[in-house]
Length: 99
Ligand SMILES: [Zn+2]
Image (cartoon, rainbow, N blue to C red; front, side, top):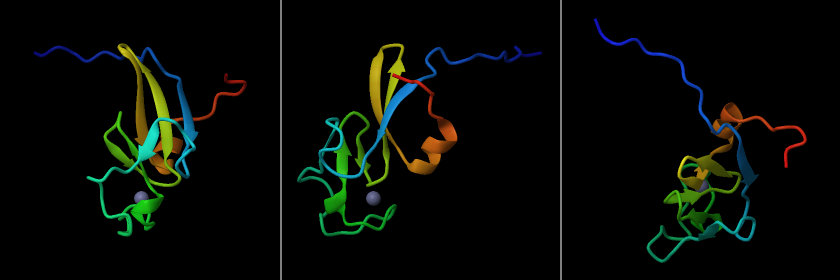
């Protein structure tokens, strides 16, 4: 007989987030570098040219207009990640009177 799973709750349940639409919206997001995709090429996720996109170096991910930039408090410090609107809304809800 194996060991039974127990229930745990995450220690850090709140995040700070901002929805990103264009360069300048959020200091954590940089322009796509020269190693990135062709700026005139169209993104398969959002159908907009890569020229409208950003780069999140923390998450090593391209940022589409409308994506959320999420700052998670982890056990070893804050971490920035990129999340699409659908997943963000399924995962988080706003905290009223949040800071
Ligand atoms: Zn895109």
